[in-house]
Image (cartoon, rainbow, N blue to C red; front, side, top):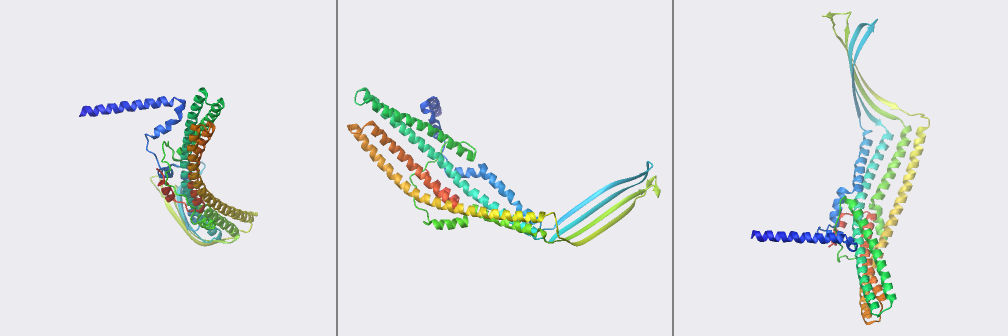
Length: 469
């Protein structure tokens, strides 16, 4: 029994080694240099878009930078609030003093001092408006981070389907090149036996060369698409789940462009951030305008000092002066009023600057609002167009398949030439490629519409993931 198991294991190992030797030989062949990724994919479990997205949450540098930026900006409101709260300062010092006269030490003493000061703003409009500004900036940072969270969903989908699109395009090129090579061989055979002219061979050769160039270009596009997806999560990806046949296209719900615009005006995080920065600029302008008003603080302070004095002309014990401590203290409570009268025009200049910045923020908010409206309307129309496009491309594949079958029959009986057959095959591959691209475009357009409206969420990725094989 054990010998049988060992024998099976040895046979399996040899079989695997032979298989990898064949793969190694294929890699050194120009014909099969593009197959390495697909061979590796057969040994690796394919990854889906949900797994890629979860990994991007942990490893995407753009998203992580946005997260740390948000954590940093959260401290703005803490610093703004601090200016309204009491401030307490403690200080202390110790000094050793020596007094000389004619190089003779006359006196030496050690002094200690300690003090405490507490201040509570009582009337500070500039500080209050600055606090409101800090709250708006912190909320704007939160809105920015929320947008980056949503944008990561779209970026993941774009890169994921970018790889699938490149794979489909390459597969179409491979199929086209293979079919045209077959037709080229047949055209050469027909020419050699005198059944066709040399022009048929030349036209087939031209089509083959063009398909080969297209295949090489699509190979480069696939590697670029893979590297872009690799950069998102920081590691190599070999195989992805493909889009299945369960995609059902439909017009957006609600089927009203203005309803989507209304939703975007309420939920788009970029627009929310723009509104909040506008509020922050307004508070900053009001803070600058309040700088000329009186500032009132309640201040309390206390201090105490102690001096240990050594006098050699006084009492001595064993040559050491007797320390005579002297302790003094002071407490002070006050309401302080300050009114800036003139600072060389700086106050007036800051006020004008702040209001100009507020006007700038107002215009930026208007621009963002119009851009969001334009994006929603464009993406809504794009989805509607792509619904019709997917349906048309599906019908085009059916028609191209029927046309190819008819052309193949005509070629066999001599009513169609090789050019007609080549064109029919190219039409079918092009239709299949266009259908796949239309499906990807439809999925991404829906995500872009949801992002512009501010309604995109991880459940959209879960739904897309369910459509993958």
